[in-house]
Image (cartoon, rainbow, N blue to C red; front, side, top):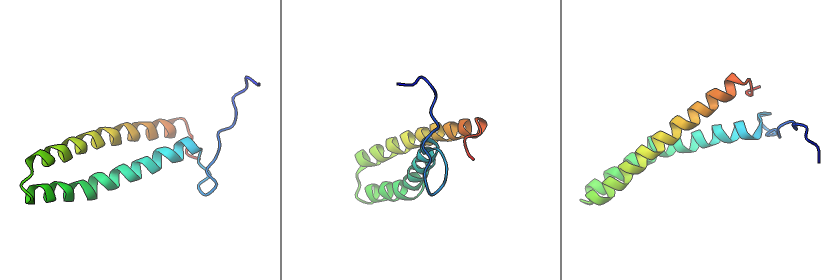
Length: 85
C-alpha cells in the first residue's frame, strides 16, 4: 500500500471532487426540505390542532438550520482550499 495522497475521485458530470459534490447535494436537499416542506408540515400540524407535532417539526427545523450552517461552512472551506475547480 502506498502512503501517497491520492487524487480525489471526481463526479463525472460536474468534475468536482466527490466529497465537494456531496456537500452541495446535501445543501440542496436540506434547503429544499427546510424552505419548502417543513413549513407545510407545521401548518398541517397546526390545522390538526397537534401542538406536539408542531414542536417536533420546529425542532427538526432548528436541526436542519444547524446542519445547513455546517454544510455552508464546509463548502466555504472547500472554496478556500480551491477544491471547487
